[in-house]
Image 1 (cartoon, rainbow, N blue to C red):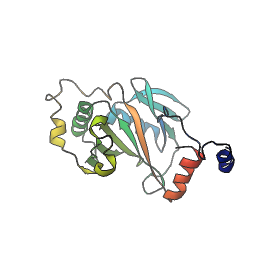
Image 2: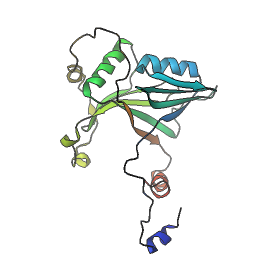
Image 3: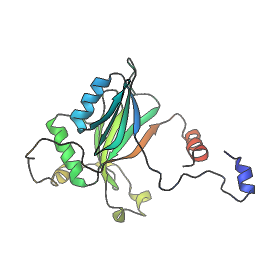
Image 4: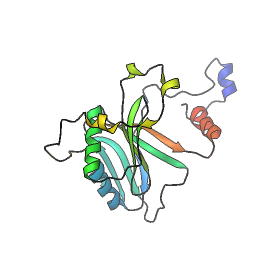
Length: 206
């Protein structure tokens, strides 16, 4: 990486920049028991097993990689440590989120939160290793663009209204995540926000 003063002298940016089309790929997680984690992600999300070898497995939906699980027997819980706060699975439509919540209720999946953020509706839970998970959908950009700074919030999710997206009891068991889910974002727990900003902005170019 070129020195910032050198770049400025040359008329270029002081910080590197990531290409606008960059997006989040598969998230890699350390797990203590691979079989336990595979069973969890199958039961809770119906994820496809896209590959497995040498203590690691790749999971996804509709052929898209979303997670890579790496087994380290005896690994401690992720709770209470810096690092991953949660990864967030973005589903395409509101009925997709409603369908997943209905499935979670039938399976008695333990949830840690249900929130309305104005820009999105989100449901939160943890996996067996304490990794935080968010599953959410984004409201159409036209409804919130330019208003995020003063309107983004955390309110209780209107579950009754969300479930109104469903026609009634499904005729068949949950079929897994719909076609089109992506890894929407990743939130991190850090020891120092200024130092972390300096790394991601000045070194990586965010």
